[in-house]
Length: 197
Image 1 (tube, rainbow, N blue to C red):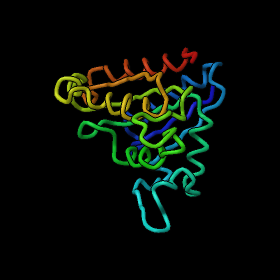
Image 2 (image 1 turned 90 degrees about the vertical axis):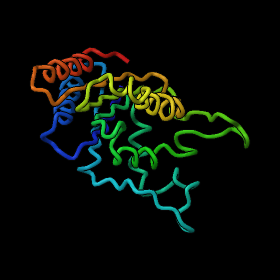
Image 3 (image 1 turned 120 degrees about the vertical axis):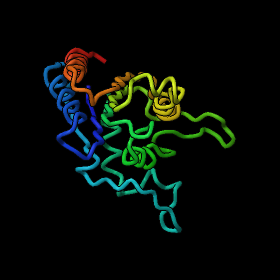
Image 4 (image 1 turned 135 degrees about the vertical axis):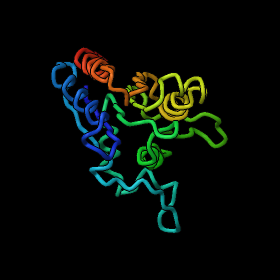
């Protein structure tokens, strides 16, 4: 199984970076995971800004040569792992810009005929893991925002493009120095060390 880890945090001394390291450590000890690639969006200086005009049309995003490398990564991956913080109740703008560009019509989904309400997901057969951290309590997203984060990632994005198997690790109150960070890091490590599909 090929694993693509999309890491979205500007600081390599952050807790999110520690989670990235645990993902890689677990994958390295798992015979089921053949190869792992890491896409660090900040280190890559990925440009999240959408630009459309006469020469650069939205309907052509699926063949944009500037995005070819990233399309190849997504097609190569069997499992896509996202590691990021929750800022203002949602993923960082950098990751949302990546999603805007990469999950494009005729690459990630397509309508079989004009007027169809639901598209055909073109990334079906893949699975996803989402590891997110936040300062507030874990229940904040569910109780205050009606679970908007999971709805966004599971239904509005991944389900829409055909990725049905989605595992969430949502970790809240992560700035408290009470030992919970080490437990959560170990939980992620153990998952990737033993995951089969």
